[in-house]
Length: 237
Image (tube, rainbow, N blue to C red; front, top):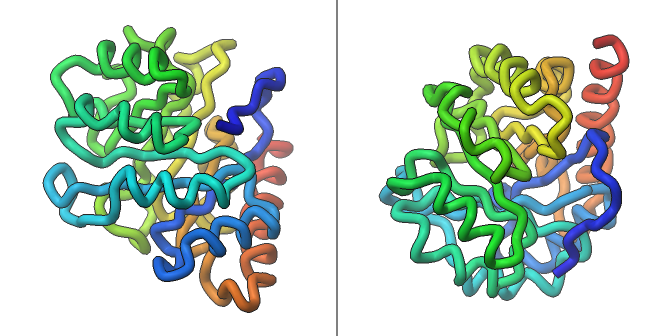
């Protein structure tokens, strides 16, 4: 595993979602986005039950792990989630994120993720209040704020999540917790969420549009555009 062990900071991180990559070229796509400036690689796992779509499981995550040199950030949109945590840890996940609603005991889920040697993330759907995780903050390494309803890529950003990010940023205080935003992130929406306190931005179509494994230069341009917009907003804030 390539988990970063450096001192925690809140620099802007761009985590392209391979949900928007060419599935026939997943390993090459991971290498390409990293070469073009990605900080993490975001792996969206959907079960067709918790969310209305089906993507892939731990065997695919294990196959792409050797192609990822940075951080493999696994977002589990599955329920029940606890029985599969070990599979994704063994597949090489650095971060494993589970939804509050994906099991009966989120505290137990977060403890289990850490016990497996991974960083623990918790995801909040657009309708899930920030206060839901107030009493498990010391179990968390990452909070994923869904800015679309989970299940499909390419959806439009939901502006109502911005005040939630502000609440979460106040709640975590000095704790070393990343605030990640996933859904509709573009150079236009990135400033909204980073000014509110987010630092890790998941982007799928906004990163992969216009490029390919054969010509990945568009990936780099897209990543730079999102990063520059996000960093400028943080300076103004």
